[in-house]
Image (tube, rainbow over all chains, first blue to last red):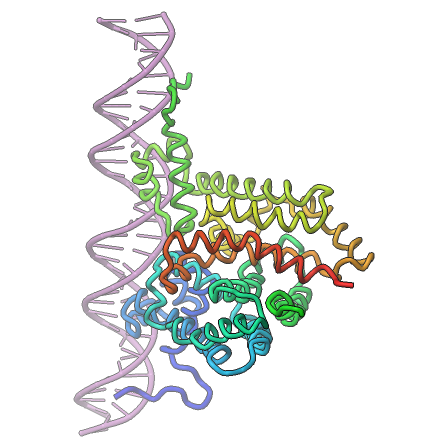
Length: 207
Length: 207
DNA sequence: TTATGATTTAATCGTTTGATTAAACAAAAA
DNA sequence: TTTTTGTTTAATCAAACGATTAAATCATAA
């Protein structure tokens, strides 16, 4: 039987390894991450890593699975409902920037690893389902002359691009513009409104 | 004396290695790239790679230096002059998308490697110089009430984000949306106008 | 043709890396 | 306490890796 773990607030070795792996993998990527890095970050022996997760690959799949599920959940919550389009845009910009402030390395991690293995996301994400309602909404509003015609892919590229790019380029802009953590944070907060304004301003037609 | 190379259209071993390295490094990143991958891509022996470039690191620095210089040059050409702001925006969207169609892996490569080593870009790029004129332009136009007030960093995040994101997410959107090369190319062509429209529409104030 | 220097290659080196083993340790059951 | 089962670790392995060596090959000059 599994021995007693998690007495009050203590965290199990298994969980510590997973959290350390998430941290190191998302920061350095799969190839640059060594199992010894993860072991050191978790404060355990390398053998324990294999004892709980068998291999670097298996551990990686768990980490990226969690990241993708989290991302999918945020997307689904915001888009797969009957809220007005402009509210969806505002919600996304605000909530996704908030989410990424907690997980600033996730976007670059996901894009980098997707390049390495394009089929990777299949197990965890189903873009079709979570964007079905949005597509219909874009089509209807365009037919009514309320917004411009726009391909859903273009819509998402605009929205996600404007939202995620400050995180993708974080290390560059902080370093090149000699930006402090506070300045960077203020820039992100400003963008919550700005991103929505940019897109609503473009999409909605003035009569 | 260096032996005869480049008889008519032939390409030297040295150059073949550099081109192969650029291809493999930009596609897979530093850590995932093995010197044997480069040697195979170039069709040469690993020892030749070290004969011409001494080490993986030195070869990598040459590759990333070329990429950064190229990027810097495009940026400088477009922004460091006295063209009107709206023209700069249109030029950038058009020419940068054209440039990236030839080098689709460069953005993700640069962002990934910057995360690994933030000081990397220092040797080749001087953001301050190439954006000096733009900053003044943004300030002046805002004072005149022609455009909104906007931090130059926000301006660049909007412009570069909208332009580069389709390339950063290429593998995901092509795979998830089951997009053909032709469809993807058409989407990029559409964006040349769209990106400029989005930003000009947002920036310029209507009286 | 021969001699010289540049280039290319097969073989190998020492280190790093993912993974395993066997022993030590710890906690619960008998 | 003793036994059993689960956990942790030091030591080690085989493969992969960046790099080097020494010999072979090639092109030009003498």
